[in-house]
Image 1: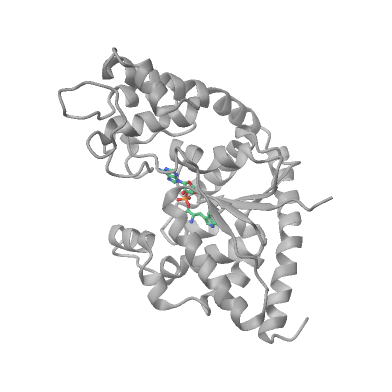
Image 2: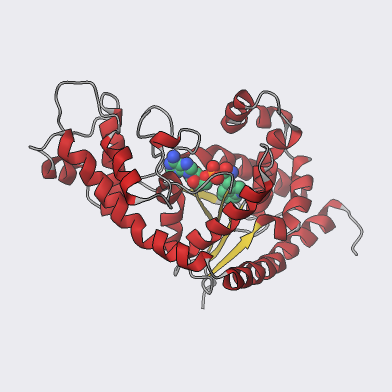
Length: 332
Ligand code: TYM
């Protein structure tokens, strides 16, 4: 039998998981779980490029794991682990820093955004972050990296680093492809549709564990467009707020934009906004309930992340040993 192709991705537990993380990344992971050999992790090492409150980081890391499982990632079919439990990430991360150029890192959009936001803490980790992300990926020799649109640039840099390394030492790393969903790849903030949905604008962000009434309130207040048309029509350039709501609705219901336009043709925004809110509430309800149940079972979660780290470490170690040998480190 042919070996399954490999998928790998991660999310930083720097904030509570939100609808952008779900539609841009996790939903795609769950849909392909049978087809691939899967590695999904909590990228806790990445979070400390910005100051974190230790107790919150611990809580969010476990909550994130519970949500991964509640979304449908069966730990029997997916290797679920915490990044800092697999030391090969830090080890390969250092090696790859030496194969990443200063100019490349300076051009990263996420570095530019975060260094503008945290001017009092532009640390070396924030700058070198994409080399650690390249290590996260390349250790597992994946074929695909399912991410939202904003991570495409980091995935492309990963490919460049891998190609540079392979060019010198032969075929050590598989060159992976980013895998970006057709709808939901860039969910925008509900109250600022020109910014991406993120925890930093909480009023425009739908958190996965949020109460239904809060979700509905945010959708009812979502910014639609200032035109007088009051018509549900997909026109991202002129109607970014409505286009964002349509893309959320489409990603959740599987309906095309044409179908959504005809469904709401004579209703206007007043009916459309709560309908999107309902769809989101109903999509997240079973996930939230299941995550709450799983979170109460600490022993189960511990077993999942320990087993996951063991499996991940075994695979990661094979790649790391190969890299160390190629670059001339003496074998242990
Ligand atoms: P992070 O933690 O910012 O986001 C996690 C995933 O969610 C997607 N995403 C979105 N998708 C659509 N709309 C949005 N508004 C939105 N916000 C976030 C992101 O594209 C991502 O897929 N560096 C990564 C974490 C990481 C990683 C990795 C990912 C570390 N190592 C290795 C893949 C492979 C990050 O900061 O994503």
